[in-house]
Length: 79
Image 1 (cartoon, helix red, strand yellow):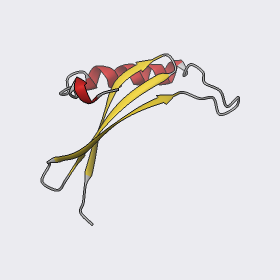
Image 2 (cartoon, one colour):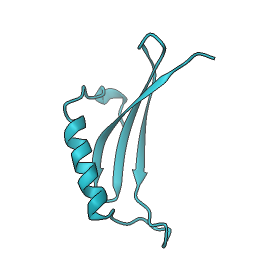
Image 3 (tube, rainbow, N blue to C red):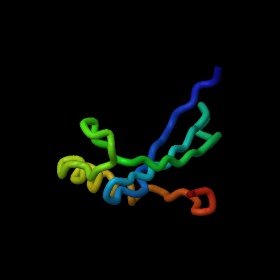
Image 4 (cartoon, one colour):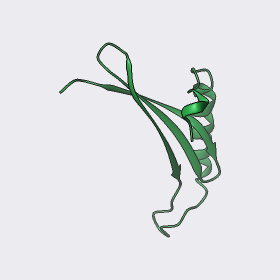
């Protein structure tokens, strides 16, 4: 099979929700597929959605700030 690489970009982190965009690139760097995932933070103890810890929120904010400088995906293909 062909080798691919994946670039992931955090688009949103609000409360319990995360939105992540993925680009799949072939060996030449050409985009061959994209995908968007919406995820919810879940407590491993209660198995229900919950707000992340302050540590996680801080890391998400840092990542959002860093990813804000990246090229944004075409809004026509987003959820």
